[in-house]
Length: 149
Image 1 (cartoon, one colour):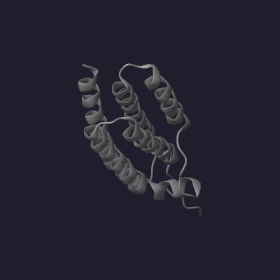
Image 2 (cartoon, helix red, strand yellow; image 1 turned 90 degrees about the horizontal axis):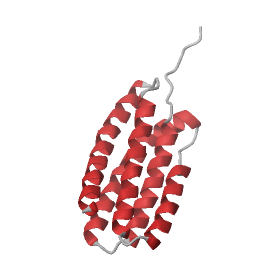
Image 3 (cartoon, helix red, strand yellow; image 1 turned 90 degrees about the vertical axis):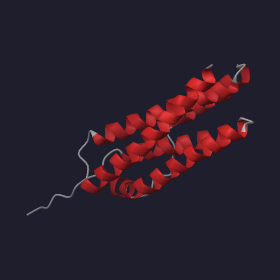
Image 4 (spheres, helix red, strand yellow; image 1 turned 180 degrees about the vertical axis):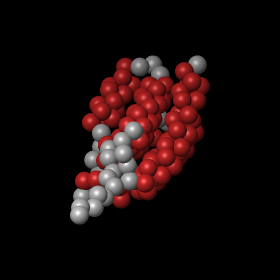
């Protein structure tokens, strides 16, 4: 008789997007000369680092090793933002706008994972991470709106 073990799915993809977001926020803190934004970005980095730490055990279950790579989509957005900020009159809004898009991507990836059958402990962790990432998204969206005007 074969026993079926619960699987984890799509966790490494989430971690890659979060790792890319962490790098992007770190770059933004060095590019923007504003301590308010730096403190805000540091909070976003910490939230993502905590989420990655929580999800790593599921990445190991999924792939056999911890995920340390970053998303190519986030890398491309980061490169685009660097270029755009050089020609833009408002590099702060450019960074904030693109970082908000990364927050969107994080939620899309978490939702994609939640649509798949997950091990129960993975599902619970994903739900908990989603709540925190939704808070990050909402804060970033509010910052985007305020920097736009």
